[in-house]
Image 1 (spheres, helix red, strand yellow):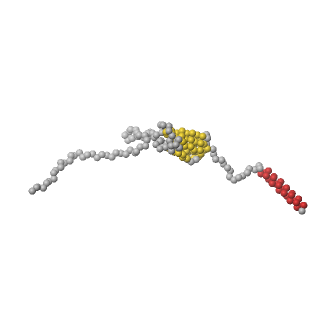
Image 2: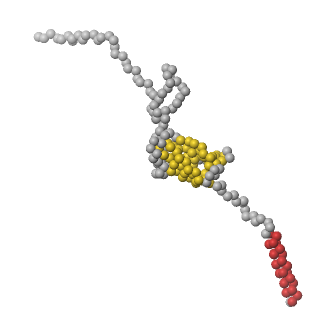
Image 3: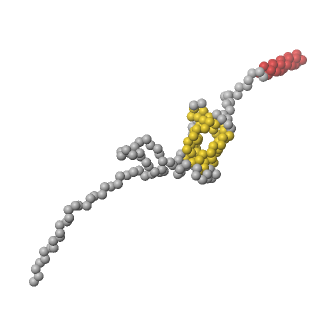
Length: 182
């Protein structure tokens, strides 16, 4: 019986030493846990203030469209409406990208500008103008420069031609023959 105990104790000792040596070897090897984790890119906080050019008051409910591109790759477009203070805030634009900011508001000319976003926080102020008269290199048929009033306009429709009155005078009316009275 004692020989069996000696064998079992030697076997347990060998197992413990093997386990300890495997653990020591395994510490140097990297631990693999499935797919490699890729952290999301750094993003910037962008705040756009939309104001009326004439009065400096904020414009509520203006649509602010963000079109970011990074390394020549289009990252999609995002639209945010302005709050009552005229501010549109977004936090998902990657740092180091070029962002085209478009502002669309009722009664104002559309604004668009590209910005390089390299800092973690960016504030942009936009003054919205009323629609302006369009400049054209084309001319009318009469040789004069085409001039149209600024703003939204109805299309130019030709006026209907007025029919001229007849030039011959009408013939005098003859009385109708009456029956003799008896």
